[in-house]
Amino acid sequence: MSGAVRNHSNTESPLNLQELKENFPSRRGNE
Image 1 (cartoon, rainbow, N blue to C red):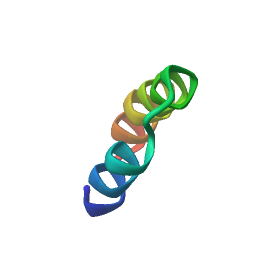
Image 2: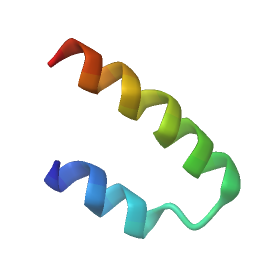
Image 3: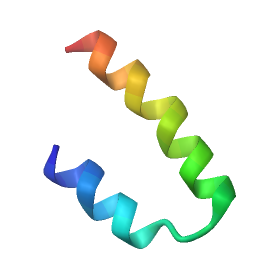
């Protein structure tokens, strides 16, 4: 969770945000 928050702050671009959102659900499903 810490990594996600850190990335959120570092991701200012819409493209990065979309990639994060796509990876976020994938990672959560694995957990």
